[in-house]
Image (tube, rainbow over all chains, first blue to last red; front, side, top):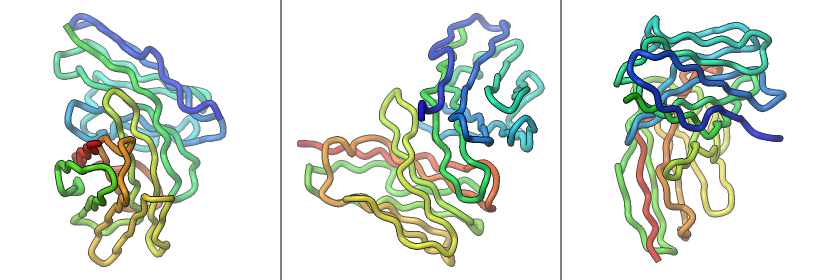
Length: 114
Length: 110
């Protein structure tokens, strides 16, 4: 079990640029979640996939955000035209699909917008 | 909809006990507890399911009162390594995302 892997660990970019993050879940996990966390707050749900299907999106996920999981394995989260308010830690988690399964988090990608 | 955690922060001496509470205004299917150290990912501690048993692992245990939509995390004989922020995450159904509380910051001093 290699755990959930996220890349890059840190991303610094200028406002208005596009950024893309990658998440590789635990191999046997068919559920994959994206959360965002700001300082002093708990993780905030963005979206989740079961296999390649995106099953739920938060209202927080504006049209500048898009996520994919094309083959049901790794996932990417893209933010277009980044804004100052996008600065946060972006966390990925994965779990098995059956009810009541724990979600295991990766180390996150810290995004800083200049 | 976001669960409410209490207290917001607690300072302990090594060996002391602590209780962290998590309360929801909605019916819950499960409560998940995580510990997060500064700059690191949340680490899964335990999950409590509706109709399930109280869980425990060594000196950390938790309970879930379905009727009151409340869960409590019990840390006994605290160790320095227990320091961190504890989050509860709740699920209203058997599927889907977790809704996390704002966290309880626990500091254990020698």
